[in-house]
Image (cartoon, rainbow, N blue to C red):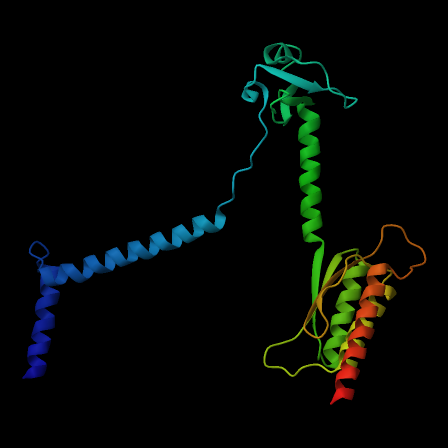
Length: 261
């Protein structure tokens, strides 16, 4: 009988929802309303997160033409010298607005009005696109190779081949030597072997270490390597020498610690 009542109750609910929608019960409406509000809330949260992810801060541009807003200005000529102080209106009347624009390059001070420069629109746009393209190329050309101090021989060989491949393609490579969580601490010979292997690979690729090492041996160490634009015999740079010296210093320190024990 309990099963019959349950079936009858379900049938009555279905009848109220589908057959008699003009008189829906409050019990049927509330869950539906709650679900609708929950869906709207999730949709809002997702769109809000997407908007934050896609948000880019606006680019602040220097004031141009009337936007300079000062009664007088100094204009830098093509030779880079500062011209006499003139009124902004006279300055704006001195060139063709269809071809050029006046842009503030230095804000006014207590002693001087704003310093401005005249730019050709086409040349300025071309230079801006070239600069943006170079910035994108520089960002995309940077690679990273991460090695564990206690890395096994197979993985080390793979990472070194990857490092050499990046360098031979003229990428700027950031090398990160670090430890892994829940892994054993590396020994001094392992540290020395990993660093020396990396330096040998850099040299074999015709590249150089271009930044001072940052960090600590046996914990985390970072430095950058890249092939120079001009070829020729490679000599050990001061950065490479510093890295090698750090390895020797670390080895000596560990040996002293073991001797003390």
